[in-house]
Length: 90
Image (cartoon, rainbow, N blue to C red):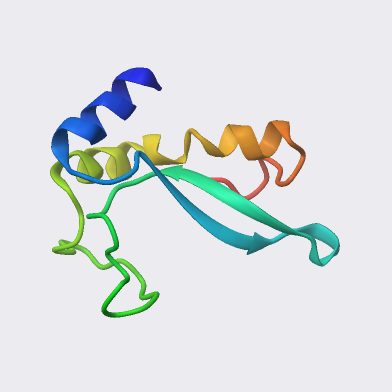
């Protein structure tokens, strides 16, 4: 995970992690954690939109992370905190 974080920092400015509020079981809110695959503040002008194939907002390292699903690795923190489960991952 350290090497991935370093690659993200070298590749683009901004935070290493992407955080998003989600609603879990029993309507409990939690903060989902993923490695950032897009440019910092990618949704600032457009708001939340689904990522598309060949999305111009995706960084070079982000493309690799997305294809290998390594961007999902920090969600293990959410699993350990019992905010989400392995079911439906990936």
